[in-house]
Image (tube, rainbow, N blue to C red; front, side, top):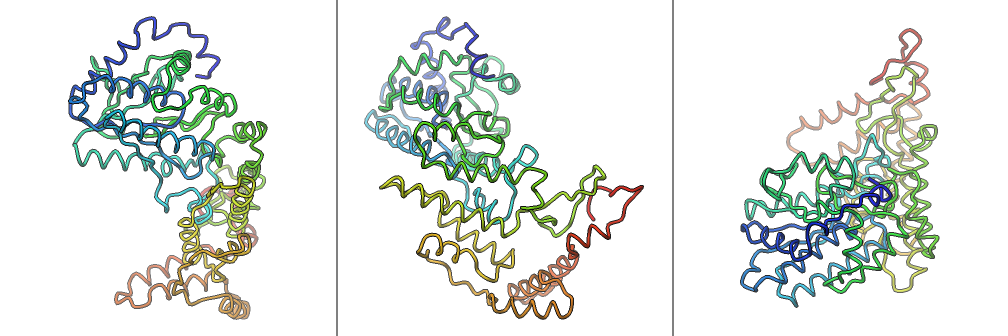
Length: 479
């Protein structure tokens, strides 16, 4: 439900309850068992309201009853809008400080995806195309898994947990359906959609958007934030990305602040609004976003993506058009994207003295380099060269034992041309042989080589000439 629609709803939660009643319910739920609480905090209006209510409610309890830990978790996807990252990081520090001063058992956690699951490792390292509605690979890896790992850790320690979320029934029809589906009769708790031993408590479930803003503007932040700044941020960025903890949570609306690389919307209104408001240093990020959107245009895909899938097979679309359902980004396109990210990082820090913005982490660069070297036949070892050319400096690159270099590739190219062999085929076989040195069991090597031979080694042009047609149409599926 959008903001305009929500504002037409006149019923207010405060017509039925006052803050004392709301605090009392929170206290009763908190004291009813020994299950620890895990509060999802995204920095947006709803999660801020929920956390603020809980902070005040627990502060009213006697010290001897504040004996159950409350974990506040916030997920950093590593591709969040930089301004939002700063806001959340500073807020979590204030929450931890004020909680300690008030003797509240509140602990804050900044969760992050595994480096192997990060956005840039998947997109630049593995060649995953920019996320789309049909292939939304980012949500699970960047948002759901970090939260699920933390919840799993708590479940292993305590058996059960209560997940506190700032969700509201009036957000949308979908949200209302999800809330109704998992509600427990005669209880303020709901079942969790993924974990059978986790329960959900939504203290602002029945609130309207007007209730949320009214509360935030009238009740000061207990950790010292200025809630009016949040109003200003919403006016600028036009929305929020909620903390996503399962696949029932919507990732983002059409206007939101969140992942600046998000290509689920073709136009990033939030980033544009921030730039228009004076944050011009964000412009290179917008250019990267727009470039990724451009790669999703069906007419452009052949310019950016391989004709083969990751397994080396070629698939045709099922519409009989003869169009190839394309695979990952080419290595050259990935190099281009990496250069854009590194240049944007330098530009942002140059325009903000004292800034230490990292759009891509060294750990991600190490993993991308490893993938290029071992999976993509990058015998040139391109990544350190790109990094050095743009940054004028080096990282502490691991000196790996890959024996092949640009010299060996040039020699191999001559041999392949002489014998009419695909260069990629020869390189892959040699890479397997190198990686299998010292192994006593050889069966796995033969399996890998067989898989390489089963890949499509015809050029795209030759493949399209030779593909068989049925009634004048190319059948969908593998070539």
